[in-house]
Length: 94
Image (cartoon, rainbow, N blue to C red; front, side, top):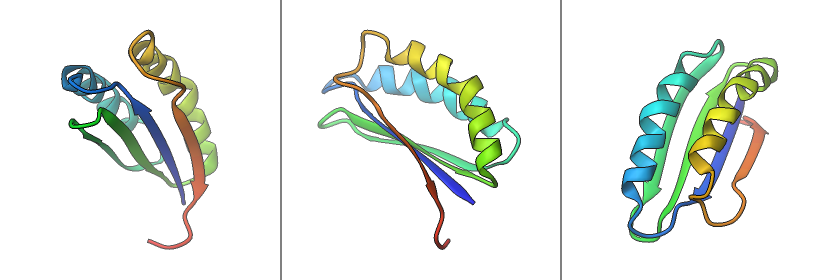
């Protein structure tokens, strides 16, 4: 099993941007083969947000990335502070 963690900052007062991203991206990720669960999270007080996804395999995680990443980057374009942190981890225990 693998976990993808995406962290990014919209900055304070940008909850609507995070909500719009979550409403499009969460169902898109959930519909991809091998997705075991997806959660969007954040802190409105400092504008830090993220997405956490569990995948059954690295192959499924990589295949989904090719579909999801362009849509994610469209939401980020001109809106986030700094570069997003996007990492794939092997799950040690769950």
